[in-house]
Every structure is written in C-alpha cells, then in structure tokens.
Image (cartoon, rainbow, N blue to C red; front, side):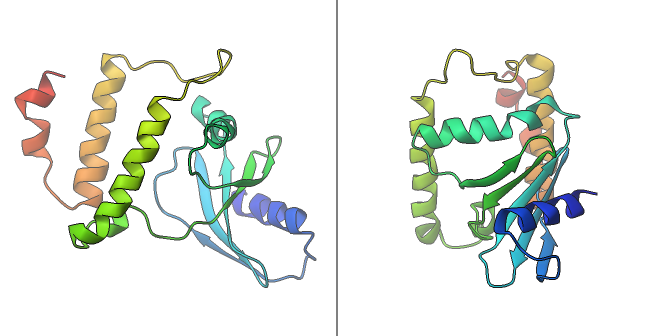
Length: 176
C-alpha cells in the first residue's frame, strides 16, 4: 500500500515513534504510476511523499533527473529522502501555489511567476546532460500526437474548463 510505505519512510527519515501523529493528504494532480501525498507530521515541516511503480520507465528517472536539475542550478524542490528499493521519495513541500492556481488572478500578479518559469526554462535549454544520462526516447509522430491530445483533454478541458475542439482542429497545429 503506497500510503503505508510513505508513512514508514517519513517515520524513518525523521526517526519518529510509531505513535507520532502524521497527517496524510492525497494530491490529485497528474501522476502516471505515482501516488503523491502531502505528509504533515506534528511538530515538523510538511513533505511531499512520492511512491512510484516501475510500470512506466520514466518513473525510475525521477530522482536522477532531480539530481541533474539541482546540479545545473535550477530551482527545484529538494529531494530529502529516497529509497529506490521501496520506490519512495520525500520531497520538499513548496506549497499549493502553482502557475495553474494563478490562472484567474490579474496578469500583473502572474507576470513575475511566468517570467521566473521562463528564466528556468531558458537555463534548462542551455544545460547539457552528461553523456551517460539515460533519457526517454525522442518524440516520434505518434507520441507527439498522443501528447497533444492529452494536453487538449487534460489541460484545456479539465483544468481550464474550455472547449479544445477549435484549437485542436487549427490547421497550424495539424501541420506540426
């Protein structure tokens, strides 16, 4: 059970007694093959707990990619604990606010966050991974189409609550 494994991980990481109160709150944002939970032990800061399966090959890359991004100087949450044998990690909790949660705020308030995100992307574009870095296969046409359809369905429709049909049928996007 992923929640039990994460609870065991946080107790081991903080050396907590079995009776120490720990609240766990599921995080419902996308997570293929991953269970993501906010873990809040009494008298300690909260963590984000991630339990992953190896059903998807990219799940095994999470921790190596996080290490690479940190070494490259990108602003990412700190990996505080990882146990690859049990497929769990505890990550620094940066809170609930993300770019999507700001979508309805005035642009003047969002602009700083957007600029910060683009600065991080710019830094990433000029960062070279080591030659032995195991990345996912490159995009081919079927994978690109799948990602595009996933974006329309899960971001445009589910998260933004908008109809994606006009955008998905746009000739410019069809030609990509």
